Image 1 (cartoon, rainbow, N blue to C red):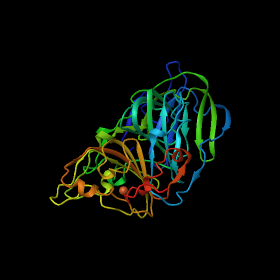
Image 2 (tube, protein in one colour; image 1 turned 30 degrees about the vertical axis):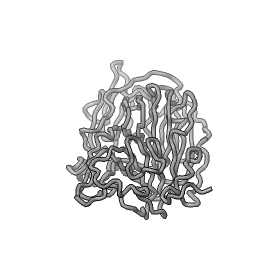
Image 3 (tube, rainbow, N blue to C red; image 1 turned 90 degrees about the vertical axis):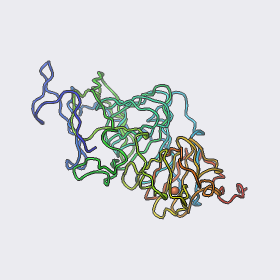
Image 4 (cartoon, helix red, strand yellow; image 1 turned 60 degrees about the vertical axis):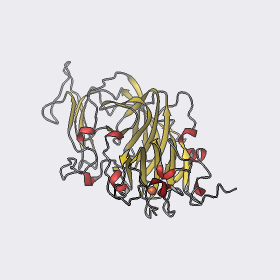
Length: 390
Ligand SMILES: [Fe+2]
């Protein structure tokens, strides 16, 4: 993140002696991206962050990915995904889609996750329902309905639900942040950005857990490894810098509207390597006297478009079977648009009460086993008005 935070105790001068009340040196750790050339944080540990006592390969049981072939628009019901009692948000997340740039998964967690670190890239949570606490080496963040949470690469964390916590999870092969066009040259949000620093939350105090022989599951490019650390990794007494987990709520995203239909980039919320994330929020719709409020048909020539419908009514999708909890995948190579009759029906509307999270990927999304289990097989034919094919 562009702006600086400080939490807990730190020494006045970086890379100088900083001692505990007992007189021992705290262990300084720099978490920095892009090889010391971009954002970083300095953390001060009670124990050595390097002290591992075991490392074990762990099988990755996500199942395979299959291409979208035959190429079809597809729809899924996240409500149909099955999660066992005691599922957690790390080991029981289920992969819906993926490519070399991003994995998109879903979780319905009712139990605390193990300690976990994704060393292959940043993660982005969208909280579809429930609440919980995400504990990290930087401190804890509470999250609830409609929150986005960005977790930087290699940030150790665990997810502790309050009851049930439902998440859409993106795992990037790189870093996720606000679109660069929203930021000044020095990193401040500009006036045209739909959200700004005041909307963001970060950790506010250290956790300071104690424990010995503590396991941390690490996702890395080759798979999963379980490290055992000599001491609990949540031992940071203070940190400062511009790299940390941060959250904001989709209700704080201020929609940009116009006299005629505004294209999806006005809804952009994040950018990642070869993908973007957009937030479609309740909004006043197009107010030209001759406007058609639902979108025009569009061939998204260079992207696959995944839409997760999270609240409200979807004017453009009436008659398609899509509702809250659905996901639609409109791939490159297929022109999509409003359902039959939706354009005419939308004329005269002045407000859409709908909330959706969209992920546009610049390479095709392959389909995971969880997607196969939750697909509405008749969706592709809903524009024809002829009903499902046999
Ligand atoms: Fe679209």
